[in-house]
Length: 86
Image (cartoon, rainbow, N blue to C red; front, side):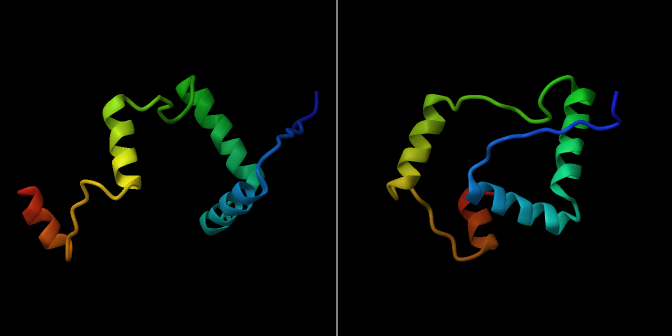
């Protein structure tokens, strides 16, 4: 059996370019990033992040945000913390 095997996948060109730019910033090749992902799946015996559908509150919040509703504008971090009561 060979020491490595080829993987082929179809990826949207824009997504591929954006992600490869991130890999480059991290000092990784696409092959290294995919290998890292595979090692994490093996280690966790599943995806190394949560995959779930948003609940109705989250969906409504996304829709409101996209429509510009219920937004709070803050001048800076201190203003944001004050508005949050932190």
